Length: 145
Image (tube, rainbow, N blue to C red; front, side, top):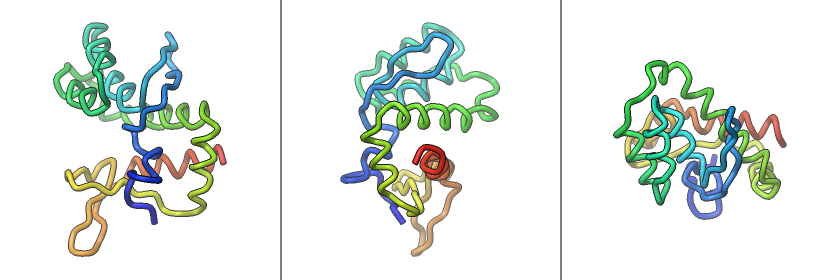
């Protein structure tokens, strides 16, 4: 199991900086998945640009919490994440090779900030959470590798 998206596995993180073209009606380049994902929540061009102008992925995440979120976000956010992660790895063969090199390992976005939706947290020696990001990464690995 790979339970940390840091160090040699930092490329699995949505904060990993690698510019990619976002599949969108108005194709645009984004520095990382986090910027694109947070911008996708927006309901206005102003909010969209506000998020994309963030200097770091962490700031994009922070700004994503400050904007008006589209009403259907809970229903579409996993679909958006899949599209963005797929685009990132499809457009960068070197990252695709690294993803393939994880073999059949279970990918868990282990974290200490309590995100049990996209990742998992370790509690009493067990992993707790839905791990949707890990599941998406494993699905992308199956499709592309």
